[in-house]
Length: 174
Image (cartoon, rainbow, N blue to C red):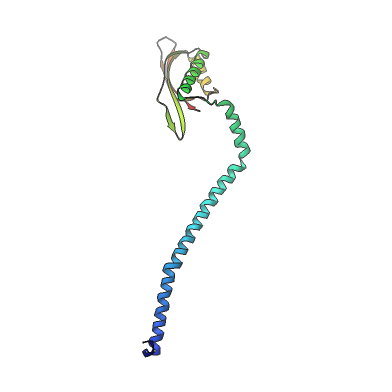
């Protein structure tokens, strides 16, 4: 059958066959390989950024370990969550006694988990003189238990020179 074709038709058939072969190679080989190469290059860039971050962390390892050791002595690892709440209540009550503040009401709020951390929240209402209230807030801020004052509402108290204060405190449970 190919013998009956003219030279021009044979050349045209060869060119058509070559074009079909080029298209097949492009679609089945070149496009997937270039796509895969592009994906690998993007992955290399992402891994390079991750490597740079980890290298930065490793370069700061001594400082991070020192900070960890500093906080390890401050934060005490506790038992069950109820024990943590009990300890928190005792710490706050002790700070109130130390600051000459009268506790009217103290109750734990529902604990929340935020970013893999358990937080204990405490609502407390106190009657105090201005000096005692200032001392309590100072003691809370500088306590070794790392107590955070989330909310403070101060109003005139029942006594003439006293203040009534409503506090919401929080602490990270170990």
